[in-house]
Image 1: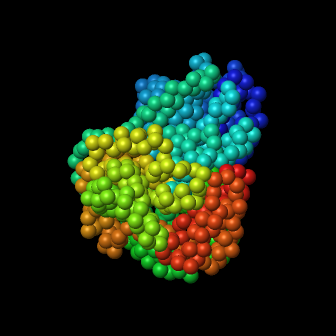
Image 2: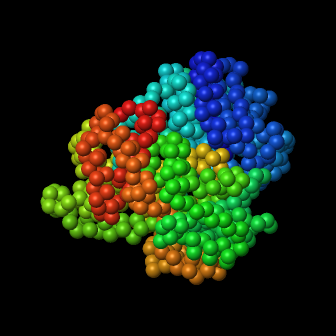
Image 3: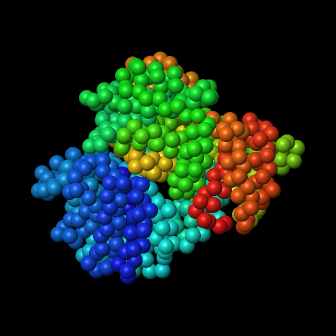
Length: 623
């Protein structure tokens, strides 16, 4: 993995120092080297920070040139089928390679096949390719959005980078928070695409490419859509495809291991890794000695022994969190409720000498592992029954019942429009529409607040149109929760430690197979993720196969009431004193209510406010 940055447009070469600043701001993403390219015409400057995973030699440095120096390439990613692509290019195009890694293969594939190459990549990536002859820049991002890319327009220049903080480091991007981004954050605990926390900066869409001219003209297209076609896949076939995916994700010239929680997904990766690797497989788990009921230690130990991995437990105490929290908060490229867990285990992986780690992320989205697959159909049915009575009932309940994490969600369900997209969003919300209006009266005033732009809502509705309900929920989990929270958090919380996190469940071949399964593969049953578990058969012990969904979480409630109490209170106080559209009294009430009745309020709401306060302070942002 790496960090990329660049500027295109008239006079771009005059801003080489800005690109250098962007590259330096991403040093943590690539501690193994850096490079700068200036096009002969002066219309393009590209920058790169390198984390050496494949081909550790100097021959693989970036920016990488091709076509006698007329094409320049920067790439943040890993292509898992690069060996097949390299053999094909050598056989059919007589391409001679000077490196043994994937970067040169992706470059040559783009040179020979153009944008058609994107569909053929089994990869996670964000990339930029400059063509000096055409004076055009190609930007592209992987199917699921595993690797980030942000873009903005300043005057006649287009500026892009792997991180928001890199764009700010350029000195060309105004440091102003975006109110719509804050609204999305209040709703879901993460900034919602295509916006960002910074006004004028947008997230480059996943599964898309853009061709940019030096005058600012842009042609943007989506190159991949989840297929509507269905196909039968036996348990044995699915297991073989999964094993191949894990084997591909183990390809590395640097030390590699995996995260092991004891859940179905990470346990399956551990079992497949042992089957695929000739070497010992290192696995890391986090345990909480002070709160053993929060720990999954016994399950991780069971699968570690059953599969035969080299298992290491990382004990985390409240005092450890207090020590690591400032660094984790500073690492945030955008504010997020999640991500601290990834920061901590990535820190442990770095300390253990790993440069690559495999994660079970993606399994719940593909095989119906989240409670939303059970809850959303029920919400839809209840909303349809209430019909026109929904809004009057919501008003009555809001007046008669003291709000807590359950009643506020129920009222929000009654307030929301009755279609599947909005009702799914209700299930994923942290603060309800009415709560957001109380916390930030200057944000939105009329109607139900979705936290998403109308364009995004339309995109989601088009995406799930004609889909079976469980397929629709899966696609929304991929698009809303996974892409905009889990993948984003995994990227910047691991990359701050110079660690590359890979997700075998999002392997192109395996994910395409899973998405093409009949909707019943995602329908909840008595057994969790029944279709996938059946495929794993005797690879998993009985107690792992029968586990109900238990998302990895840390004992934040206990920490916030004890070791982190003063820290959180201080961060919330920073937010209450912020100028702009926030209601300081309402924000303070959330914290006080949590301290008095933590189980009813839930730790997520005050934590969301605390993180935002700290983020604004750390990044010198005003609302």
